[in-house]
Length: 212
Image (cartoon, rainbow, N blue to C red):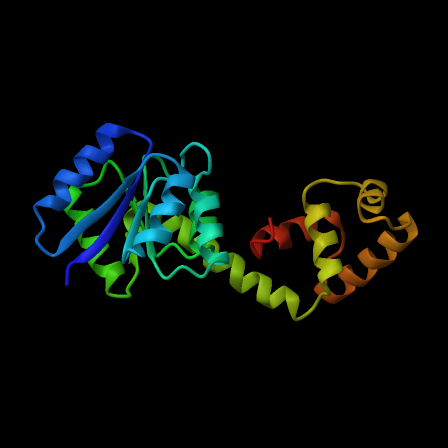
């Protein structure tokens, strides 16, 4: 049985090139071509392909919205992101939403074929040269978040992020619908538990743990 693939990109030239690329691979069959996010979701629901090759920037629904919908509907298709530029936050979010591979459009076409084969087989395609920093950042964030979660409450972590973003106590209080005194009390507890001596040290701690 061939690996079934749905192609999603809003540029016809890219779609033509991808289709020609996979036409040369006997074990890969393109079952649909899509030019916007809604069309992509319909194709994935209809064909249940093994792999979706997805551009993040598309009209109607972008790639991240497509991934969210696929997750909500528990669609079994595995996704490879094909992107022209690498935005760390987008890569992190796509990975969290279930994307199994990321390939840059500037890379050799054969690498995309390899990525499809690996992802279809249940593996991941993480080309570290291209986005190793993004993956390192994600792993550091997750490890830091687990460590902090063992020390602080969710509300305290929220306050740490706000302080590290430069917000003053009164602004934090307004946003969280608390009194300024309650925010100060939370901060006192946070400083003690994390063994830091002020806002600057707390901000450095938050950055080190990947909280911001």
